Amino acid sequence: MNASMRNVFRGIRTGQLIRSIASVSAPQRANYALLHDSDLSFFDRIVGKENVRTDDLDPYNTDFLKAYKGTSKCVLFPSSADQVSAILRHCYSRNIAVVPQSGNTGLVGASVPVYDEIVLSMKKFNKNFHFDPNAGVLKCDSGWILEELYNRLSPEGYQMPWDLGSRGSCLIGGNVSTGVGGVRRLRFGSLHNHLLGLQVVLADERGSTVNFGSDMRKDNTNLHMHHLFIGGEGQLGIICGVTVCVVPKPTSVQVAMLGVKTYSGCREILRLSKQHLGEILSAFELMDSEAMRCLKENEKLDNVLTSDPPFNLLIEVMGSNEEHDKAKMEHFLSVTLEKGLAIDGVLAANAQERAYMWKLRKTLPLAPLHDGYVYKHDISLPMDHFYTLSELIRERLKGFATRVLTFGHMADGDNHFNVSAKQYSPEIASKLYPFVCEWTVEHGGSISAEHGVGQERRPYARLGKGYEYELAKVIKKQFDPHCILSPYKMITY
Image 1 (cartoon, rainbow, N blue to C red):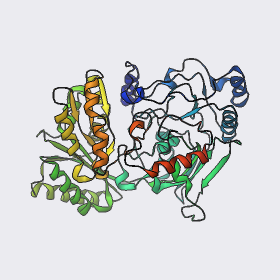
Image 2 (cartoon, one colour):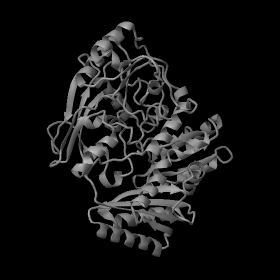
Image 3 (cartoon, rainbow, N blue to C red):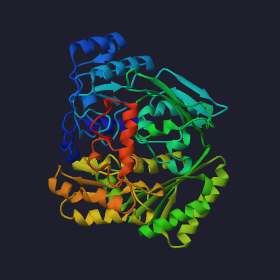
């Protein structure tokens, strides 16, 4: 993340705290123990006084969007699995609730306390780093910042398989716990494709440290339990170490933007992109006209397309032969224009133009925040219904919302439609929820594509799950017998 983006992120954190409708309906505080001075003394001995924080806790109690704020009295900064083990063993014996926290860049309130849970910050858990360039396997502590991993891998000719707008501050352990997707899932696949193993500390009687999976790309000797922690939001254990397959850094990148009149045209262009670009297609992002208008009005960023199309597609290819890749992209673009699917198009001529096109897309999560209050969404839907919900919401909120804008990873069916207003409105909330969640599930989608459940979607986490949810509760009990990890969120009792 560049300096200007970091400044925008900082600016958001100074805004007024507004609790969302989901947080108001949080469960009552469970019968967890209150923190005593004797607990703080114990933590001092384990991690050192300098790593026990009891004042100025707002940055750790408050989530990134300032929608949720807990009342934790203590933040701990462990730097080893042994320290985490001792902490969880103590919390198990005392029945003290704990919420693990990585970069605190999440959008659903998963990484902050609901009440007074102690915060276990992993920001200092970043000492171990080992990379095997022959195998392409990275093994590191969970507290490494994603951008630092990119920087460490780049001289070796490799990069991380996922990329996020928050990569300058998010941590790899948090990426796993959230189950991030990002903008290049189309090319490199999901986190499940790349995760080989995890070191996890459990909140049981012993504070057990368990190594799930292995360092090998192929190991079929046990149940692949490390995959349970992807998207687990810290409810099963504390991730201390991560082993992943990384990917070769591309030497050729081409980026284009296309203007399209209809959503059906966007679907056809997606189909053609897979046919014509195949193995080098790395991103296919949709931004509607309202999204581009928001960028113009709130961020002073102009569209590279002059036709002001209803839909804008950002398409990227990554490969190893620039001449070959550029020729494939140019042919694909000409096909979309000849077929009348695209009404406008621009192929970036250099790195600066490519960066600007991506800036448009990566600034979109921030742009509507200038309107006041934003109802953010992260849903996945079958391709036929991807934009239908956006149209329904726009009609339902006519005269109520400032704007309804849609952007997202179209190739993954991931729609990040945002609704903005001057301030929080119960009327808007009642028109959105539970309608959005119920409609999404009824049409075969998911209410959380990649951002997680946290506090924001907890009231709707069971929709369409049935016995699957009950099995998840059984699994949590096995890993976290007293249910002290991240209570009141995705899996509740």
